[in-house]
Image 1 (tube, rainbow, N blue to C red):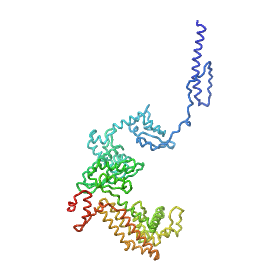
Image 2 (cartoon, helix red, strand yellow):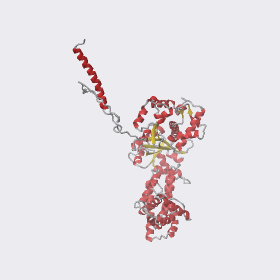
Image 3 (cartoon, rainbow, N blue to C red):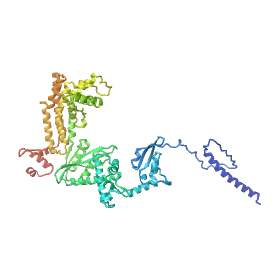
Length: 608
């Protein structure tokens, strides 16, 4: 028989055990919330001689969907930048509702499933459009295995040409054809990263190309992917770049042309082109050499990049000239890139883009005289009037088709920033001058000249300005004055231009401009007929004022050309190479100048 004391101890242990069990049940039911509304469950538990310990962890209530942290539930295209395998698909369900899902291109390709046979990222698609779902899949074993498999199985161009995975004759022919496809796309500025694969599939499946059908080798090894297009392009570009560099190194002389640009992603680049004489044929070539990304557009940065290209890749010995635009960064007298290059090689000839300088000379001349600024405003107003309305453009075209002496031309835009576009603008208005006036007058008479404030010029205002002696005379005068400037600009733009023709061409242009001050040009002679047709009768004072403005414009233009296009004595001396049928001693001074600059023997140069 147990003693009373022992019975008491056993009773206390049993009560403690019951209390512990009840305590756990109490904690559970205090947290869990029953969602059943039809029935109520009443649980009565008596707990004796116990209490919840102070250090016991109390479960917090579970948060509902509305209480959870907000996630972006919309597909973001930026997610695909570093994840080319991520696909976004939009479809409709049986009820016609829009359904958006995300799929993994690699997992779908290899048909790999996740844990417990999960095929969400393969077939059905992930409907939770959240970045954390994408990263979870990216870190999963399922996706990692596929990436590893893709890397191992994918044949590379380098391996194939290095005979690590040798190709058969048919496969090699197919790769060559694929290279031609990439070259075609790039040459015609077609995005190869998105078009190449579809282009190849179209050629194989629709055009039944027997050659390109051999691009696949094995189950997963193929040359039809976007990565293959990148590899083919890199292989071609590396080969072309190396060939160009070798041709430049073999040349007796070359010049570097460079300019900076900012791309659509706001990153600054520096592009290099090289003009050189082919050592075998003597033909002058201009080839693109490289494009590099730079941190900034400072003179020090551009100089270091240019110096590295010349010294390490092309060779300093045959480097004779440097071409650029006219900003202080490039041609500054103290720290400009051209100045810094002259410090390491003094005989280098530096050239600021002549066409750019010619455009600036024309712009300065227009802005210096009020009558020509007013004419510029008329040209801009006429272009804006027709550009802003298809109905007005169609009305002018119909009128041009009816008139016998009127050419069917569109009114061109005048813009100083687009170099010498003035010539096209004034000639287009000259050839349609009568039709434009008649069309503007018809718009006023028919009540179509209704414009809102700030919406553009009115037909009545433009018509009055066009029917003035100043507008008629200056527009026809500009057709004659800008013609030699345009011819000079086209000379500078030609591929085979050399420095020897700059001074002779510039002298001929200045001579043609000065001649217009005393002799009317071809277009000016036609202006009298237009004045008579629209009964425009100027006063003597108006004639003298316009004539004075035209002469002043020529003087300013000539002065600006001589100032803007002023070259070094070395460049001017190169005109000796363009001399023909001259005396025996002609050009001796120029030859001596060039021989001294390039460290040639002067007597030997004169003799030759």
